[in-house]
Length: 142
Image 1 (spheres, rainbow, N blue to C red):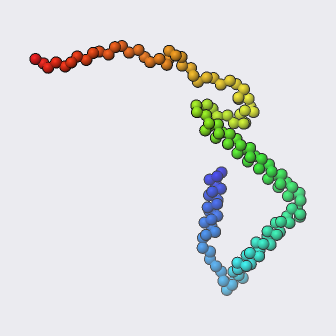
Image 2: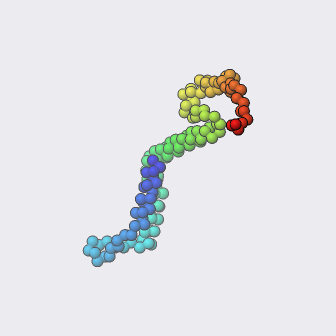
Image 3: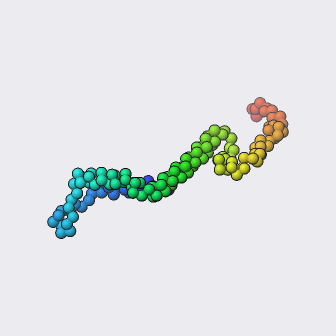
């Protein structure tokens, strides 16, 4: 999803930076060039109109607010889960499985974890090695 957003962003930047073909009023279609002042005036009137949207459509604005709040709560919950996963991964020195808040709710943490230390003292003792043969001083043949 992040790849798509980045791609859309950069395609938008490229589209804005591409040179445009300007038309003159003599092209026959009646299109005139828009000045910067006209564009700024249009943008200001659009912003003023958007400020009055909730006054004109209160039901749509209320539903939009509820949707925005729900999306915000989901984003916070996802960020919290990701933070917990990263914190647990970085803080554990051994390789224990990472559990998140969602798995804790299912009861996965209620089961005791089996110990990974299954070696006995005999397993840890080094193998027996017999005495090393003595090296005789090399005598010159003779």
